[in-house]
Structure formats: structure tokens, C-alpha cells
Length: 217
Image (cartoon, rainbow, N blue to C red; front, top):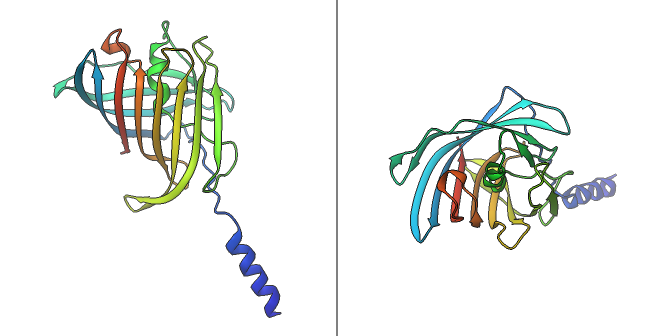
């Protein structure tokens, strides 16, 4: 009787610790992050801070509608211009497919690096996944690539730490490297991204090189 128990214990120790990461599908849940941006544009350094909000508006399993909004925008220590909310059509993994009223596709491109793409199965340390997103707006394809690196505490909560690469097709497409910290229930608790050729429509025609940090509120 002892040997089967020992064998069972060994098998349980070897079983991978899988994290079943899924996006929120509760329309009543509003997720918010405090965002800081250190950017370089047109040869000048700038910094900004705002609160980024995400709320599910309709939860169709294939093409949900999510409302994104910014609050309390400050740019270079001055109050920024109020920005109206945006409704975005998103896929089952959280990817932005198009945004209402975004005729020049700039807002989709601006927000796409700031969203996390969920895996289609539980992941353990060392697992990788990739998603190519061809937006419904006929914009350039975007590729997201992730690797689960380790676990770490964030404000007392156990998280899985994931490295990420963001690549937008085209010679002038945005590229980025980042790190994401997610809770057991799939909530993004923290992230940091370094971007090149980032598009920010309200900042003018120049692309931006930026380091963006987010912390769940």
C-alpha cells in the first residue's frame, strides 16, 4: 500500500503547474490600470500619466464589444485634453479587430500594444504562444508572441510572469518588447512595454518611442 502512495505523490509533484488564463466576460466588471508613459517624439522627451479603463459592453464569444476609456490624462505635468471613450470589437483572446469611428485606424494601432492576448489553453513555465491578428479595418497584421517565464508576487498576489513581443507588419510598423504579470484568474496586474514607431493620433503625425508601465487599480 505504501508504494502506490509514494508513486502517486511523485506523479503529483511532476505534474506541471498550469495557469488557465482567460479574459473577463462579466459586463459588470470594469478593469482599470494606472499608466505612465516616458516618450520621445520629434527629438523631444515627454511624459504622460492616465487611467486606462476596459469594460465589456457585449459578450459575443467570437466578437465581443469592449469600451476603452482614459481618465485624468496629464501630459508633461499639465492637464491633458479630455478623450471620449472608444468601442472596440475584440476577438476571443482579447485582440482588437476594429474600433468604431476609427476611420484612419490610428486608435486601434495605439491601443493594440496595451492589450494582453490570452492563450487558448492552460500554460506552464516555459510555454509559448503566438497570435497573428489581421484587423477588420484592413490595417497591417499584428503579431503577438509570449513565453511564460516564472512566478512572482505582485502586491502579495501570486502571478505568472510572461515576456512578450509585439510586431506590426510593414517597414514603419510598431515593434515592442514587454513583460506582463497575470493573476490566477487571468487579470493583468502589471505590465511594462518598450515600443518603437508607436502611433499616438492625438500627438500628431510623428511616431513615438516609448516606455509604458501599467499597474492594476
